[in-house]
Length: 47
Image (cartoon, rainbow, N blue to C red):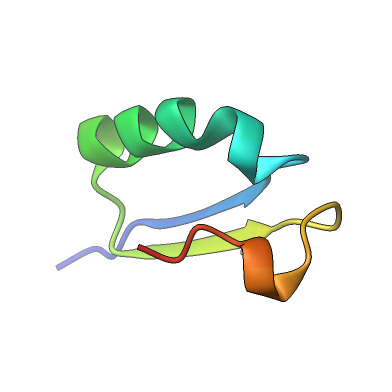
């Protein structure tokens, strides 16, 4: 069974959260690796 792995350099996840959630729902990857350098850990939208 293949596994779908996705990576994305989000670049301001807080401004793109709606796009990210839509993309996750449509693509349904098994593993997602997000790179975000503009958001401090405490402000990252974990939920």
